Picture 1 (cartoon, rainbow, N blue to C red):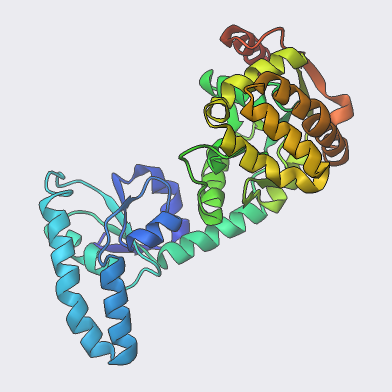
Picture 2 (cartoon, rainbow, N blue to C red; picture 1 turned 90 degrees about the vertical axis):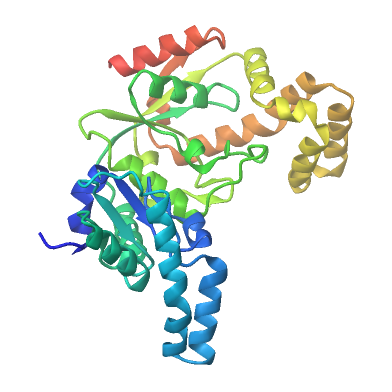
Length: 351
């Protein structure tokens, strides 16, 4: 084969996991928005340089833009050759892409091929990859979802984590979205990914599952924080068999106190989130909850939130959206220890 080989994403996909390195030649901001899973960012033009070249192209012309861009591109590729790629063996096989598979990835692929590496350039670039993901999520693989249901604090996320740890197939949408899925679900210091990256992460998980085995997933709403679950994936989840996880309310309070320790340390951050519930519960009730948080009455506050907000909302939602919930298999947890979740996970995975 002549290198660089220019291949479509359909041709690349069967060998996607076999490339030694996937190189995203776009700028750092483009990469941060979304990228092919596992890719590293090696901008041929960084954000500042890309603006300079683009502005020159629009205001002056193509020749001047290329004249300015060429030495920048050359310097950047040379730097990667001297650093990141300096120790790569002769049979190192990279995949290179940019936005549309044009000048940026073409320049890098050309140089890598001249060195002697069997480099592949993605025809159509990220845009072609994104088109593939969109289509794939409109018609996802037929998977045997098992939907873990349960009121807030019943340990759904811990059970998913335990199932994943023993080798079961798990689609953890909250982990992929970096959010716990409720008004209080923001993870401190961990921003949510873009909608595109969220969808890419879901696609990457779905493509790896064995259709002959169950896939465990939580009974999410259509949105996880600010991100939307792809519509067809959501529809299939809602039509799937359910598992009803049961845990006593005192134990649910204990579990939530462990999972949301950051609110105990910083009650003001909790109060800021509770303000989003004013329209549902009124200013007087929210102010009372603020006072409990500020006064260190966190267990009592958590219990009230469960009784007055989370449980009624959850029960309305689950009955309306998950059609097989009335026939759900009930899994009762006696406590919130690791051994309790491990026993439940093993029993579910054995079926």
